[in-house]
Image (cartoon, rainbow, N blue to C red):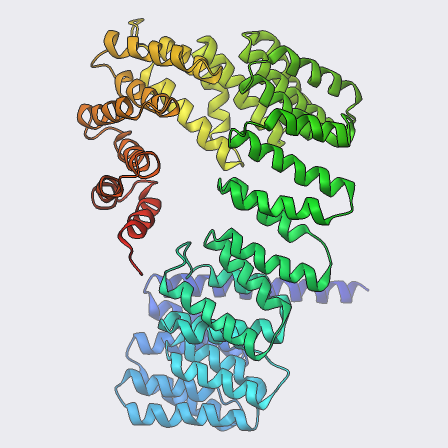
Length: 589
C-alpha cells in the first residue's frame, strides 16, 4: 500500500514539474527568448515524443532562430519512424515555406492532405495545424476531406470560422447552417458566432446574405429550425412583427408552448416597440387556455397601455381585476396599477391602500419586496421620505445581494439625494457603481457624478440642493414646478458647473410638455456653453431625436447625427446615431 501511495505521489509530482516547465517554456517563447525556450521544449519533447504541442513549439523555436535545417532533420527522422502521422508533413512543409521553398512546401502539404485517404481521423489535427499557420484554404480542404471520408465527424463549425476569417460570409453562413442542419444542439453556438457579423440594420448586406442563405436552405430542406433562426434574425433587426410571423408558424405546427412568443414580446416591449409587443401578448391572451399565461400576457398589455398613455387604461385595469381578481396571482398587476394611479392619475392614497392590502396576503419574500419598493416610491411621491427609507432598508436586509436589494439601495440613495443628504447618498452610490445589474450601475454612476461634480466647495452654494429639489419635483410629476426651479438655477448659478446640467434637464422636461422650441434653445445653449463638456454629445443626440421624432425634420436630424458620428466617435450614442443617419439617408450598407 505504501509503495502504491509513493507511486501516485511520484506521478503527481512528475506531472506538476512537467506543467511548470511547459509554462516556463511558453513564457520564454512569448518573451522572444527562443534559445532558453528551445532547451525546455527539447527536454519536454524527448520525454513526451507524441505530444504535438511540445513538438510544434520546438520547431517554432528552431525557425525563429533560423535553424531550419535542424527542424527539417528532426521532422524527417520522426516521419521516417512514424510514416502514418500525416500531420508531420504540414510542419515540414511550413518549414520549407519559411525558407521560400514553395514547391517543396506544396508537395508536403499535399502529402498531409492525401494521408486523409487512409486515416480520416487525423483530419482534425491537420486542419488545425494548417489554420495555426494561417494556411486557411488548406485547412478547409483538410476538414472537408475528413468529413467526406468519415460521415460521423463534423467540422462545419471550424470551416465556418475560417470562412469568417477570410471574409467569405456566404460560405461562412452556409457552413454554420449546415452544422445546425446536421446537429440542432449547435443552435445556440451558431447564434453566438453569427451575431458577431450581423447588425440591427435589415438592409445591411451581411444580414441580407444570412437571410437568403436561410431561405434557400428552408426551401430545399424544410425544418422548424429555419423558422427559429429567421425569428432570431428578425429579432436582432428589431423586425418584431416578422419575428412574430415565424413564431406563430412554429406554434401552429407544434402547439408546444408560447414561451418564445412571450420572450419576443418582452424584447419588443423593452425596446419600446409597443405596437409589436402588444401583438405578441394579445396573441398569447387569445390562444392560451392557462390562467397564469393569460395574467402574464395581460400584465404587459396593461404596461403598454400605461406607456402609451392610452385613454382607456383605467378601465383596462378594472376589467382585468374583474376577470382575475385581486389575489396572489395578480400581485404584479396590482403593483403596476398602483404605479399608474400614483404617477399618471395622482391618486397615491388609493394606490397605497391597494399595496398595503396586497402585503397582507403575499407569501413570497420577493413579492413582498416588489410591493415595498413601489410603496416606497409612493411615499417619496407624497413626501413621506423617512417611511419610504424604512421600506427600502427592509428589502436590503431581507434580500441581501439580490437585484431587488440593489434596487432598494439605489432608492435609498435617490431618496437621500432628494432630501439633500448628499453624503449618505454618495456612500450608497459608491457601493452600487459595481452592481452586477448594468442598468442599476449606470444609474448609480450618473447620480454619483451629478453629486460629485456639483458639490459645494467651502460651504459656498453650488445649486446642487436646488437641482435635487427640481429632480424630486420631476419625479413627482410636478413638471412645471421642476422647470421653474431649474430656471431659477440657470439665473442664480450662471457660470457654475450646475448650469449645463440644469439646462439639459429642463430641455428634457420641456420636450415632455411638447414645448419643442424652448427645448431646442436650451440644448443649443448646452452646446455653446461648454463645447468640451460631458453633456455635449447628449445634447446633439437629443436635438437629433427631437427633430426626427417630434418635428419630422429629417434634414436637421441628419445634421446632428453627423455631428456625433464625425466629432464624437467615443460617444455612447455613436452606433445608434450612425444607424439612424444611414436610414434617413436611405443607405444600403
